[in-house]
Image (cartoon, rainbow, N blue to C red; front, side, top):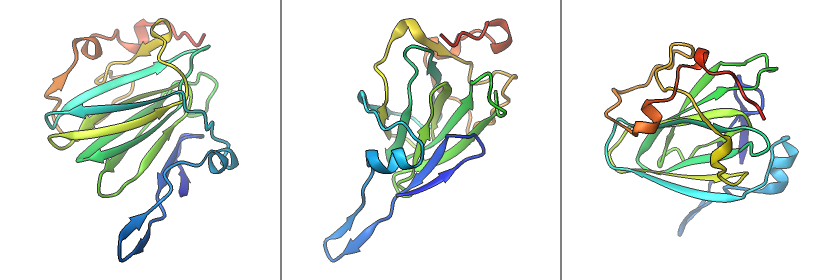
Amino acid sequence: MKFTETKLKGAFIIDLELRHDDRGGFARTFCAKEFEEHGLKPTVAQCNLSFNYKAGTLRGMHYQVAPACETKLVRCTKGAIYDVIIDMRPDSPTYKQHIGVELTADNRRALYVPELFAHGYQALTDDAEVTYQVGEFYTPGYERGLRYDDPAFAIVWPVPVTVISEKDASWAPFEAVPLAVG
């Protein structure tokens, strides 16, 4: 695997090192030892699969606070998504900054999402499928969310949002919610 740190410290784009032969290809998609060597948390508590019927579907922006902070390793296994993370670590020099990465079944890229980063994505194709390994169990009492269109973050989504859950559409504006980190 090739680890490329983003401008948000601790967040990495992970590209596969494919090995090809007459049968097809092979690549390692996760190795706890390699993650540790890059200072990443290799714990996997849950693996999730998300399926999106229509392009424009948006899921997020979600994160969990202490003592249930999550890491995520996100990969698109069918179609394409635009994956966005926001640094919610109050002591970070990139606090409230975000990046977006296109993850597709063809580019086979993954995005490593550190603890206290809000995460969300938009399906760029119909029938987009996303799998992600999560470093902590889902714990509803510690879940937080941010509006996908909150002016505090000014995220530019690549296509109009056509489908979003009522919960994700109704998070309070960021400035109205006190930051709770635990």
